[in-house]
Length: 103
Image 1 (cartoon, rainbow, N blue to C red):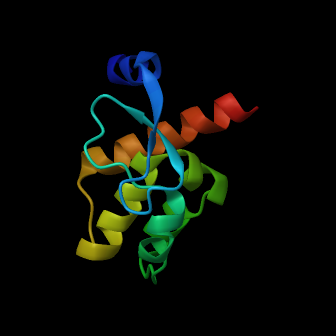
Image 2 (image 1 turned 90 degrees about the vertical axis):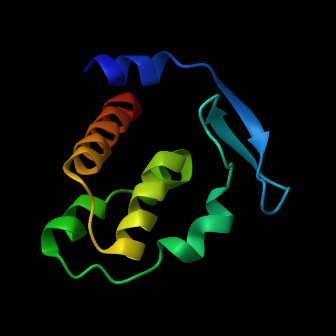
C-alpha cells in the first residue's frame, strides 16, 4: 500500500511519444521510453489462452489508454507467456485504483 501511495503522489507530466512524435503521453520521472497507446495497439493484440489471465486482462480499453504500466504488463505477458507474482499483484492494484478513481 505504501508504494501505491507513492505512485499516486508522483509528479506526472506530458511528453511526446518517442515513436510517432505526435501524441502526448502522461509520464512520471521514472518512465524511460514514452510510447502512446496508438503505437502500442498492435502489440496489445494477441491470444491469451490461460483463463485466469484472460479475466485479469479483460479490463476497459480506456484503462490501457491511460496507463503505460498496464500496457507494458500485458505486452510482457504476450511476449513471454508468464508474469511474476509481483507483476500480477501490481497490475491488479493499479486496475482497482483506476476503478475507484473513475467512480
